[in-house]
Length: 402
Image 1 (cartoon, rainbow, N blue to C red):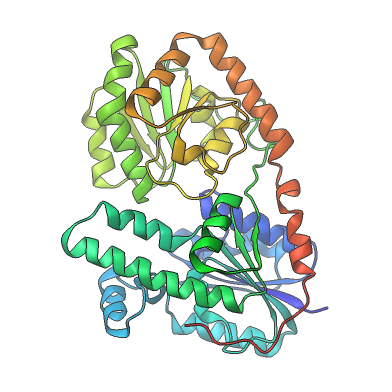
Image 2: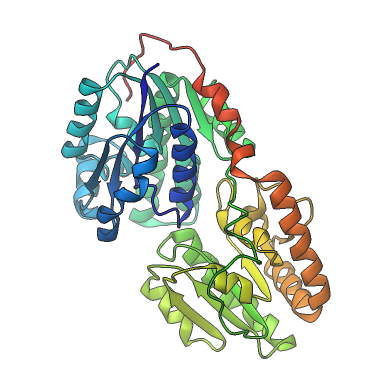
């Protein structure tokens, strides 16, 4: 039996944001089966010093700094007729690192985390290839394009079209194509005609995200509404802006003391500006999100655009907090009615208002949510189907990707 080469668009440590959480737990699971060699990008200077945190799960670890400006990636994309999502991650040192590992070690499986990294596969891989798309990126850019006009609309539509071609080509080469939910997997089958498509859902660490665990707590703020997430990510920016501008005013009519905390690293200037609104605070990066979740009277996930399974929803559920999510954010989560879901401004605002008014009902909803997460979303249970994928026979020869 050979080793596994794990390629990731971002170092999966520490597991403190959506892609890192999934990447870390999959890498950890794989390391229990075989030796894993990691090659990944870092886009945060602090991450260059964190590869030691993965020592117990990996053999070799190569972390490559990714600093290509967006303008450069955009020009390269236009000149090469490739999607910018690929040119932004095109890096010769990382390509050399892949070649070195494949030359020096007996690798029988290449696990590719995110479609941007498929460009580093050998032209004709002799190894088993497991492609974790997570979400269907071409569909995400298609949704962006629908709401954009002019040159930006053209660029987004172009990105969606070229990414779809790339996704089709990669899926045809892979032994298994993974997605974070069955809904996302089915969408991929329908739009690409691909087979060998599997849903490997996200889980949650219910020992860490436990309201009874030891963590630094913050003072109670009464009618506190909390949103968590990476705050330079477009869907999160749109979500909190939508909430502050359209929902919070309705909620504050019934609850004048209501405060909305936007908790997450790298808030953009647009997000920071929301703190000028009455009752809104922007924390920036926090050492431990659990303190804010524990202090929340209600948590919200009012995303207009969401793909796959939202970790922010699972984390709030695991912390036994009442959650109000948009239809898009709730999609893919088997919540069994343990969260409130709304599709309009009125539905979401009304649900939050009701939960702030009835704390006993809110507590019951949160407790039911935690029970559901513990029964359904342990990482061990969610990643169990991956073992069957790892046992798939090799297929060769394979065509090169587009």
